[in-house]
Length: 312
Length: 183
Image 1 (spheres, rainbow over the protein chains, first blue to last red):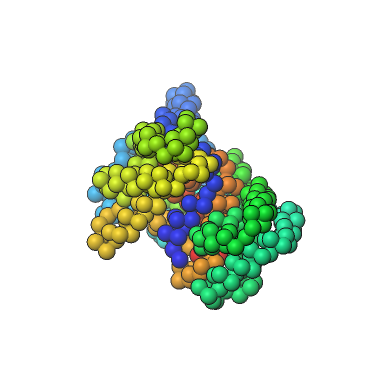
Image 2 (image 1 turned 90 degrees about the vertical axis):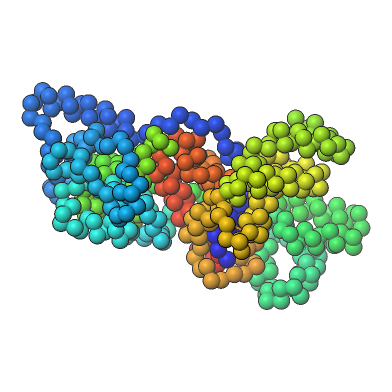
């Protein structure tokens, strides 16, 4: 099985949910972090003018300064180039870098790279090899890296809901007409897929939920002919009850989203130069020491996509 | 609208198809084009899907646009499969399939029961997502929209769209692993 099977399986999504996702007219694109950066820049500009001490050279914070990086790291955003690099520049080299201030500070952009990902466990940091190489390159010690951070809390990232309804639901399968259906269906499909054990078949019924897959639908058309009208009505009523309870009782709860947002906000509060999506600019040292910030959380650190928000 | 359509389909009035095409043709074309990457083929998929709708309704689907998109999506997948041997390109589909392959714990395995369980997991998983994330996820993997289109609709950068999709795919992968589905 492969990605195509998953793609096809989207046909099983509830039509009501699909309808909610029907494309709408595009909203005006807004850059989520640029306004904040511009505001910070303005404040900094005023402060610099008052102090008459600001220069274009931005010093890179050392480890002791890491808890308070907002000033030093926000400043370069105001000077981010607004134009994308030429296609040649991005395609012909693994990394592109641009001077941001006139002297020492550069922002390093990597090629858009999909990580062959597994979910990081607690304390684990995953990043593309090109990023790892770049942060360990001495030449880049005075640079900022355009990255995106995704926090995970190991196995808590997704949760299977406590299925208190589940045992009650299983009892519905004791209904004689349902048992008859299951037995007949098993006889029907076993010759076709003889590798199924009774346990596998039982698992299949549970996993499938609504009885709407093609072999079953085809079988039901034939099976219906064997039943009296009363039997068929009894079966459809029982089946509807089974389907309804299945559909109205979610099995999964998405706890990952909230956890991720909380962690990104925590990182921002610590002074990391990130927006609420976890995209921002970090020093090599910040990336290298990242795990020390919270060993209970695993992170994926990837290159930030270079696309300018305004050309989307 | 729904009642009128139902009446037209019930009475086998071909006006039903004209109405459906006028109302949902754009949506259907967009979904088909996202998969085939070919305007002419996408148009043909829409026509085929309308014929499928004519042959399968009644009963009326729960949601007409969702049902029609499912039909046209299926037709478009068949088209791409048919021309696969001719090695012609195929819209967003190759990219989308690559992305979804990241969720596959063990690409070598294939079991019929897993296919059935997979359908249930995808349905449940999608229902459990926060609304905006779900719209983004379905936008990409059901409606086959480009990252750029989604970025415009959601007011995000393309990088943010890709990141959000990647995060959702990782969650799906976790669920598939937890459920023991050898996709």
